[in-house]
Every structure is written in C-alpha cells, then in structure tokens.
Image 1 (tube, rainbow, N blue to C red):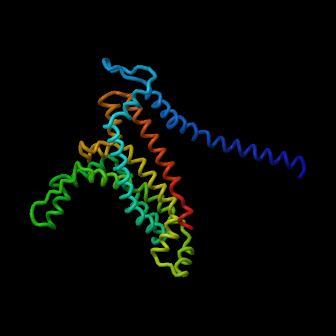
Image 2 (cartoon, rainbow, N blue to C red):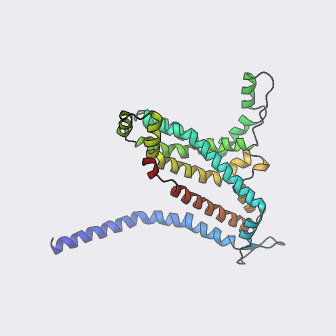
Image 3 (cartoon, one colour):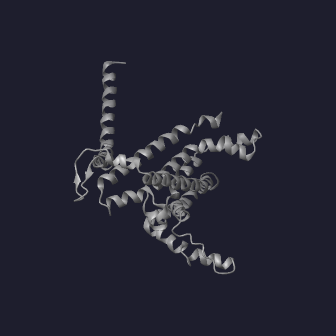
Length: 297
C-alpha cells in the first residue's frame, strides 16, 4: 500500500469521525442539559438545609437529610411499600404482556402486526391523568364494576376496590403495560423459527421448548421491559394519589409533597437522589443476576 493510499484512508477515517461527532453532539448536549445537569442540581440541593423558622433554604453543606431518611422508620416503610407495589405490578404486567408480545411477534402475520401494535399504542395517545381518572368511575362504589357484578350476582354488591392497593396496581398495569409489550414483541419477532422446529423434531414437548429455547431467546426483551416498567412505577405519584388510599403512600408522593406542600426542597432532593440510587442499583443487580447462559446449559 502506497503512502498516498495510507493518507487517503486516514483522511476518510478522520472525516468519518468528524461526521459522527457532528451528529452525536446535539444528542450529547440534550442529555447533558436535561438529564445530567438536573441530577447534579438535585444532588446539590440535597445537602442544603431548611431554616425551621423562616422555611428558607440555607446553603449549609450537611448530610442531615440523608440521616433523616435512614434513621426514620416511617421513610423506610414508604420505601419498602414502594418496592413491594412496584414489584407486584411488574410481575402482574409481565404475566399479561408476555402472551401478548409473543402472540404479536410469532403468531400474527407480519403484514398485520402494525395494526395490532397500533392497538397497543393507542392508550399512549390519551392523557395519563384521563386514563387514571377513568378507573375511578370504574372501581368506585356503585360504579361500572359494581353494577356489572350486581347483574351476575343477586343482591347489591359493593366491592369497594377504589382507594386500595389493588386499584393502584390495576392502574399501574393499565397505564404502563405497553412499556413491557413492545420489548417482548421485538424479541419474539426476531426469534428463529427453525430453532423451535428443531426442538420439536428432537422430541421436546412444547413446554420444554418454551423453557429451553423460547424463553432464553426472548429474555433480553423481557428484562428490558420489566426494567422500564419498574422504573416508571417506582417513582410514580399520580396513580397512587388518585387510586390509592392514605395507607399506601409511595415514595413519589412523598417527594411531591416535599417540593409542593411542605416546601422542603433539600429533603425532597435527598429523597429523589436516594430513589435514583435505588433504581440504578436494582437495574444493575437485575442485569447481573439474569445469567442467560444457564438457560442454554
């Protein structure tokens, strides 16, 4: 290779690098301005203090807000309750989303899949609050669900599901279900059908083919969808506030109250940093604990 050719290749590589930087820089700036910088601002507020008399924020560097979170049993219970509700909601959503995503990705003809995906995405076109308010009329006493049950069961039946944990879980599953369906659908759509046929030809029963072939191949989509759903639910505050009772306060409601009614921004910022750390830790553990090789072994 001549010197001219080497210089020409280096020039092409340099031009490609500059072109890539031109396209990547706006995205990096947006990420810096709207994600990284706000996190640093919240972290800065979290080590400030609030004057107990005037309520003004004082730039005194202190870890008292974090100490208050760790030492108080009330906040520990709120964290554990939030983890419990988010985990149960994620599990319930997975049980519903996996059959839907699998059916869309493998059984529905590809030319018709966009139409069915449209049905999955239609709820996202409606306001989050409107969809949540819709469950109030459905679950309240004397609402649609009670009327429906009264038609099936003699007598006046009042289930009273509104302002309960069950109502919160139902609301979460309804609102965020597409976040799980779409990654599972993408993973199922890329399944190699020849592997399933080979497993069947070798004498494996359908359930064994699912456990040893289908599930391992679609596990990345399942984990990604579960992670997206869990993160969205764990920090949510609208659904628990509208559908839940006073006994099922979640960490998102606590943070909203600190920034709103209590006007204690430093403590609310400390709660936000803690919830961010918990979510990141949960995601790291989730992706590390899911050992895909054992499904193939």
